[in-house]
Length: 144
Image (cartoon, rainbow, N blue to C red):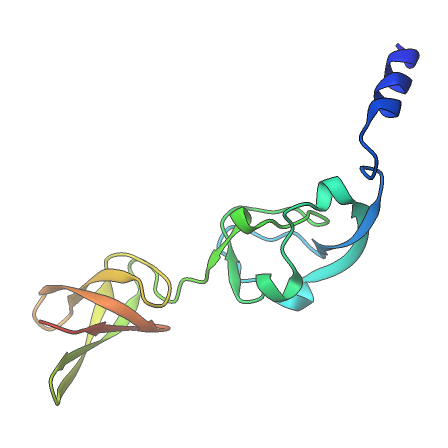
């Protein structure tokens, strides 16, 4: 058995044992947590394990799509743009029609990041509208 392991190690492609600096999580994060550059530390990792890792800067402002343990290398598939509006959350609805702008309170029926389309319901009339997420807690309706 030991000779088989030695044979496999000898047959490994050159460079697989090389170590590189990789950003790893300093602490565990939960699904939906927003990441910042301070959430990471740099560690030496095998190049093969660090392949596909995102940088601290690229992860900054993104949201975890799953729970990630401390010390893990974060990949692009572990991240998504941060949700500015969440389902069931109170939102400000801006209805724009030419020079006319109406602002009302409402509730989001879905969630998403900036620029995503989301359904909202107005508190005053219970009318359901489709809009585009403009900023945190704000949805813009272009054609009511």
